[in-house]
Amino acid sequence: MSLLEVDRINTFYGDSHILFDVSLNVRENEVVALLGRNGAGKSTLLKTIAGALSPKSGAIAFNGTPTQHLPAHQIARLGLQLVPEERRVIGGITVHENLQLAAMTARKPLSYAEIYRTFPRLDERRNNKGRELSGGEQQMVAIARAMIRDARLILLDEPFEGLAPLIVRDLMKVCQDLARQGRTIVVVEQNVAAALAMASRCYLLNTGHVVFGGSTAELQQKPEIMNRYLGAAA
Ligand SMILES: Nc1ncnc2c1ncn2[C@@H]1O[C@H](COP(=O)(O)OP(=O)(O)OP(=O)(O)O)[C@@H](O)[C@H]1O
Image (cartoon, rainbow, N blue to C red):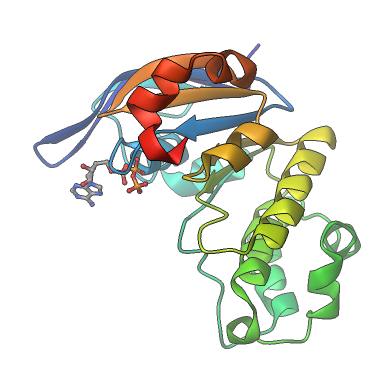
């Protein structure tokens, strides 16, 4: 059974129709990439899955539970966490306090030791304020917050944006380790090479339609699709 099943959803902003009959599925322990040009609808799709937006039609099931009519906080409690593009690390409190805040809203929080084992850099910086962190460290806090809430499925919206290549490499490894430890990841990323390197499957969106769904190896063997829908980014 799939951990996440999205079946022909249609999402609107007011009168603007953004997602058209979008379907996808994600199995446990996978890293799945969502690719597409700016404005293709990738963030809208993540927000719809996380319950921040409600689809006008279609169905979403997380771990067998229909979620398309549930509010975001209830979906989060089922074990699905969205790490938004803007990261939302609180600048005036320390790294550890940011994690404590996340743990407070968890049903069964993970131990801090486990988080700091995954992110030794955050252990070193645990007493630093959020605003003192680099972009990469802030992204680590954002992912660590989803982890501490013991999320089974983590949706990452452009996690590598603005980060140096070495940090991107470290974060890619963390994401793959999380999948090996039993978590599942859906990642939206403009850095197509990084996304394809860490994911086993991918979906390609174009103006709100899924135009490809399959293994990353399969996509890489179709340069015409890569060029047509990803252009220079590929
Ligand atoms: N709050 C909003 N209100 C109205 N339209 C929106 C809103 N947010 C996004 N859109 C529109 O929805 C479409 C899809 O945007 P979305 O952010 O999902 O794309 P994306 O693939 O994630 O692109 P990007 O990489 O630029 O974030 C775009 O045409 C965008 O202008």
